[in-house]
Structures are given as C-alpha cells and as structure tokens.
Length: 283
Image 1 (tube, helix red, strand yellow):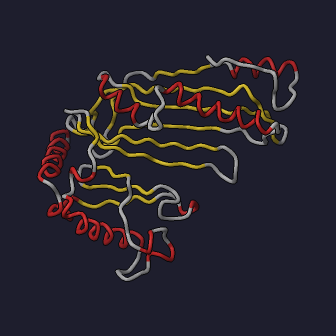
Image 2 (spheres, rainbow, N blue to C red):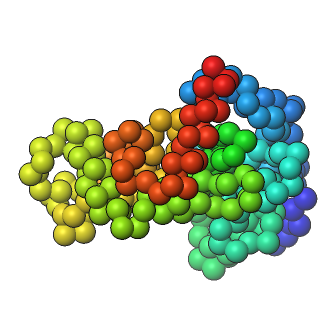
Image 3 (cartoon, one colour):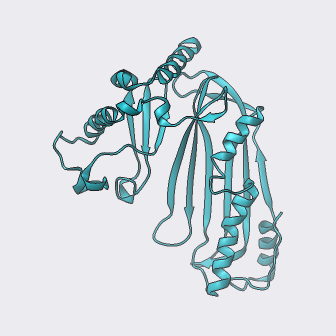
C-alpha cells in the first residue's frame, strides 16, 4: 500500500471526488491470473504452465486536463512459474537497473513523478504512466525466450517504448549471448547474410545507401542488440529510434537457420536441433 502525504495536490478537488480519489490512490492492486497453459504460436500446442500476475500502483497526485481528473500509475505484468529459478530470470528482465524488487521498480517511477511535481510546483497537464509486460516467446524444455515490452509517458509529444529480448538455457538458467549460436570468426559473414535479408524486407537493392533513410552509423548495417530464436529462424528486433525515426516504429528481421548453418557454432547447432525436435514432437 502506498504511504501518502497530502500537503499538496496539483489541483484543488471537491470533497466527494477527493474521497474517491484518495481511496483509488491507496490501492496497491495485485491480480493473479488462474494457472494456465501457454499456447505456442508456432504449433498451437500447450507447452508450459504459468500464472499471469499484474501489479499496479497509483500516484497520490492528481491532474486536471480539459475538465477530466487523472492520476499517474505504473503497471507490471509478468509470468510466475513453479520453478523459482525461472522466476529469477523473469525478474532479471524487469529489474535491469539494479532495483532489488518489483515494488522498488514501481515506486521509483511514481517517486520520480512526485519529485517532478514538488520541485517544479506546477500544474502538470497530463498524468504520467508506465506499463511493463514480460511474456514468454519461444519455449522448449531446453531453451526459452523472454520479452519485456515497456511503454512509458512522462510528458512531451509522445510516450516511449522498447522491447528487451533475452534467450536462456533452462538447464543451467543462464543467458545465452549471440555468439552461443554464431561463431565469432563467422560473425562478419553472418552479418552480411543478415543484411541481405534486411534489404529484401525493406525493398532495397544491394547498393542502396543505408545512411540516407536509416540511422546506421556511416551507413554500415549492424545487427540489433535484441535477438531471439523461433523454431526455424534467428530473429533480430530493432526498437524505435534504433535504426529508424520514431514514426517508422519497430523493425523485426528473421533469418532462416538454413541460410546461416555454416556460421553456427556446434553448440548453436545442438540447440537448434533440440528446438526442431521439440516442435516436431508436439505437432
């Protein structure tokens, strides 16, 4: 539950509404979804049991805009597994700024909003908000892709969003860097193949200058930091502003395994074989 101090409200409120607003702001909402089975997008088969949990906190400060009262909030949704080690991996995908727990992660955002109000002593025209959703992407008993999608608005012309992808080995509960799959001495060759697929997806020729319409440094194609795996492809995800203007949105690049097998490590090939075997077994 939030600890509230009401030495200042952004806008004077009527007695009736104030009572309702104080009640709403005091709520620390936690919604645990019933245990359910994740449905694989690729196969349509049930593969893993988890429980969706949603936490939501509200700010004690209120705003009025065009006759409407609003308050800032932060909301976090994430899967909860029976395996505590898997739950630690989920938290790693939320607490990547060193927060000790999710409550602190949420509190830091609301505290930032409160400090902004107090320090500037202004009537903030719009409420802030932050929404984080962690979801399971590709899953097998050997390997799992976790995705963190976060969108926040803290003033300005528009909000900001990003996705964070991480691939994990579930036997050792460790994150797998890209060089687990692609040999370091083959990375340049792999990048050239990836650029070929990128140009095809974007409708570009082999000689189209990438510096004009993209944010690649010196016009040289580079891989996104976010990579993931599916049953048949290595996938790269570029966030807004990473290679294109905000209005252009995100870019996702899929590279079939068959096109880059010569660039893979033996470990990577072993993982891919396990993934293919798993998806074949559940079809």
